[in-house]
Image 1: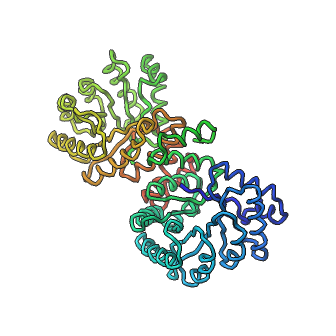
Image 2: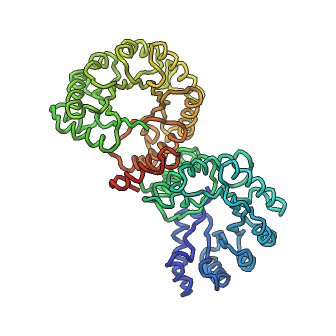
Image 3: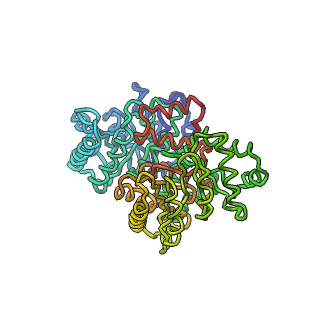
Length: 266
Length: 266
């Protein structure tokens, strides 16, 4: 499992304050927390600060790289032009978060995608909106992957996100997401499947319970990457337990190491 | 999901003391705890008290029925003769826990099974021992079901237990159990699939983490019943979250009710 840490997002009050005040120490503390928790990449999102997004992203990228030169970054923006303008500042191979199958979005992202070798998060929605069935999601991803391959992106750089809906609004949303993940895994050899976990539990109480169960089930279905809060010990412990059960942790080594390091939380 | 509460077992010190001292109040308190937690049946096991097992079972059955006349009982014994001698004392339809596919065991259980209409837990092992692959488990269950049907047991009274092994001893044990459950579900329409959850985590630290993840995954694979501790709020909360995601809880009603009643624990 590839873990993308989601905490550096200016929609969070503390991050907005740190970015506004150019408090590098506060940002680096947030990155440290995520790296210690098991993050492979750090997602960086300053989209809530529309007027200064590019400057803020550049500042974030440089402050994080200064302290963590070996940690990869995920550039998270709704604005392809912003991504384009900050992309050269990223030292290691960046992840772009994200494109979609919408025609205008794909066209705007094409020059960014072709600018340098990147990992691409691709949301399985297109001009018809968010798919209503798992089958439609899988169909969309086939087209998405073909479009990205036409732009020269190899499959193992593509991270498909099936775009989960809230189970509180649609009782079928959980099964639909699991069927979509399973279908993508069967249909598209070699791609990654990624999900932000927390949409699924929107509107419910005790959301961590639902998020953990969803992560566990999604891993079985074929999820290979997740955007989450790696400092959430309950969630990361659930992930490690799932790896043990799904034969993804030989001799339970990662699980027992996490226990010895005091990082397992029941 | 049918929940069989496992706490009334004389291998637990407190239960042994209560049974030895004929402390009905202590036993009824344990039953209340499980019923309040969501138990559909109460398992009763006095196997550790070999010399007095039958008397102890009869006492337990009567004390529990006095206080909880609407709660079904599961008679849990390795000794078919003990089961035979206590069976008439059970008011509602009993569950027999358990038979196996071993020839001698099935022969000894046959008269008990035919004595009255019961639910039967059947462990998927036979004279060749515990199956080494999921395919072998499914083959065994086909034979087991056929044997039980020959004794007049309808399918919807059969609870097949795939006999999970510890993942600490065999890294494949989790996947094997899930494949076995999935295979039984596909192969044998109308049977129940049951599991004691805790074998899977034997030998590991923080076992509740692994048990909860296994319950979640096993429910997706096709588990319809579980023998567990219903007073374990973390486990029961994980169960409720899994039901939400697997479209087994229309409009999230059971989940949100459990929340309102203060029974969800993240």
